[in-house]
Image (cartoon, rainbow, N blue to C red; front, side, top):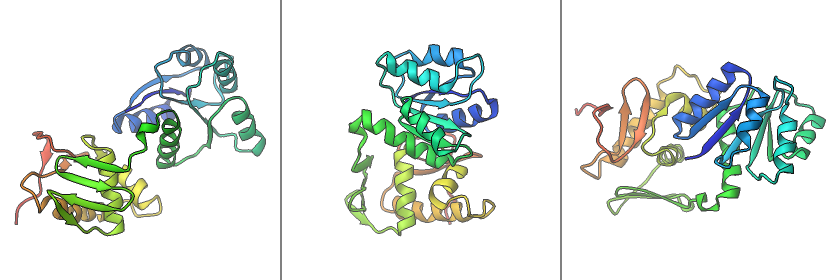
Length: 237
């Protein structure tokens, strides 16, 4: 879980970013202009800052960056901007940005870039093995075990399981899965997500009496060993 500051004056884009990161379990604060963004960015609580380059109130993104770095603040900053020329990207990085992402962007790519930036300051997040309850996944060898029993997964099933485990106890929406596992080019109306999750659930939950992969009614899925009345289990046939 990160403490994330978003400095973005476009209300729709700020809401999109905040909702997406909150769904992933992160704590998000939004500043809608340069002045409040500069004030908030001075705080030491942030794990990551997402910074729009063009802001109102006479304080632009590059000014915020330069001020942060001049004061010795080392919080990783991802610059988000519609300015896509090479010179614009170079200016953003030279001002102190750690990465530069051009609008429009893929939310999945944004999260991947944020992950990379946070890992630089928190190397303990470089996880090689994931565990929850009696389920273990070795990310390097792609070995999956539940209750000591090896489980064979197809490559896409493995990617799906890893994504669910990285977001354990959180709701993963179908949109998030579509972007991350299948990509934008896939038909959003297809039932491929439900089919793949169902197949994965049969493999993971069939070797134990405790279900781990749950459907969240009207939202998506979660991988959790906690019992919650909002979980909807598949009908037994």
